Length: 228
Image (cartoon, rainbow, N blue to C red; front, side, top):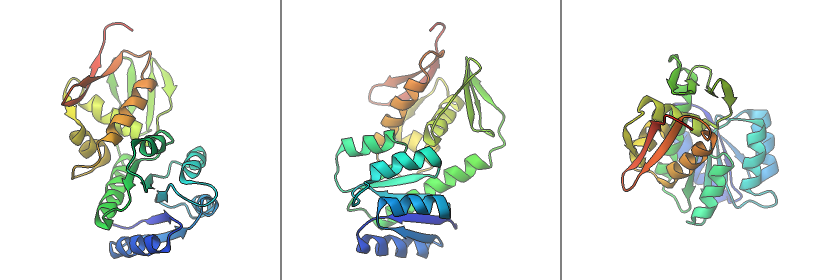
C-alpha cells in the first residue's frame, strides 16, 4: 500500500517515530510542525491522509481541522494528548475521521491509517447502484445523498455510516460491527467514534422518514417510520 501521509506534530520524536513506521509500510511521509505549515502542505502537496496533533503552537489542531474541511475532504486522523471525550468529540464534530490518544502504539496508528485509506479507496471506486430507504436516496458512485429529492451534505464518514446502515436497514448493528463496515477496522477500535457520527447523522436525517434507533447495550438500527 502506498500513499502520501502528512504528519503534523511539534514534537520531533513523534514525527520520527511515525515516519519510521509509515515508511516501513511503503508510505511517503510529509511533515509539518505547526498549523499554518500543515494547511500549506494540504493545499500544495495534496496528501492522501493527515495525522494531526491537537496541541500545536499558535493555530491548534482544531483550527487546522476546521479550516481544512472548508477546502478539502482529505481524511484526518487526530492525535490527542488527553484521554478526554470532549477533545475527541470536538475533533470528530469538526470533520476528523478518527482520533488516537497519546501515547499510542505506532502499529495501531499504521493500522488505522490503512483502514481509513482502504475505505476511501473502496468508496472512490464504488460502482454500486443508488440505494433507497423511504425518502432517503444514497448514490455511492456520486457520493450524494438526497432527502425527498433535496441534496443533503454529509461528511465522508457520515456518508459511509449511512451507506452501511441503509444496506443493513432493520438489522441491529453493534458499534464494533459499524467500525468494521464503515471504518474498515479489523480490530476493536474506540467506539465513541461511532456514537458521535451517529449523533451527527441523526441531525442530518431530521425531517426524513428514516430514523436511527439506539438498541441499549447492543448498538444501532436504521428504521423507516410511516410519518414524520
